[in-house]
Length: 200
Ligand code: SIN
Ligand code: MN
Image (cartoon, rainbow, N blue to C red; front, side, top):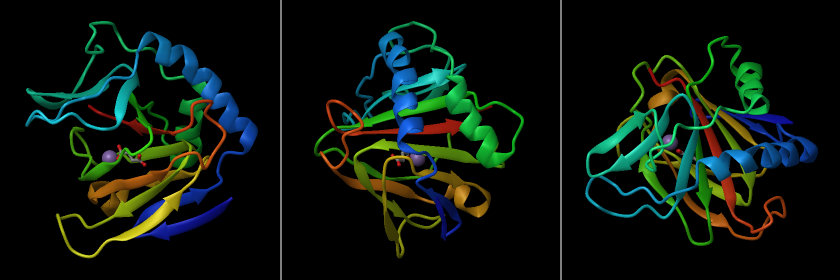
């Protein structure tokens, strides 16, 4: 593992070894079965290229009514629980005893990206957000706490964990592109990013 600080983003390269990554993919299988990935639409009606779902008491959704956390999948079913293996990464890297309420699961297929944004649908920004990357490499861009200005990018690989806390908690960030096929962790290729969040 190597630790890197980039604009307050605490980046743990190779935090998870290959067997830990494989175990996470296994525990995510039943989660994705009961809460299938869907393409959220932005409030302005644009379909996002990334597919998403959640585990936990609350899940993040977006549609014409806006961005929000809610207690059911758009199909009406309650979200599955956050697997222990994922919650324990949160406890290990943050030291926070409180459980995250949401594990947002993003799936990046070939050609997908995520525009620059802030994570600000949570009630209390003093809690960190923890991100776990699995599968293909992603070019992650970090900006400022206001839109625009100079940015810096870093490739996130499978097993990397990023902690967004303190002043970095409200920094703009996004994913410019993925290197589709760069990892063999996911049978169909692509990238899974998990973000653990305290929402209320
Ligand atoms: C996100 O900002 O929700 C995802 C970040 C990532 O995919 O690395
Ligand atoms: Mn985000």
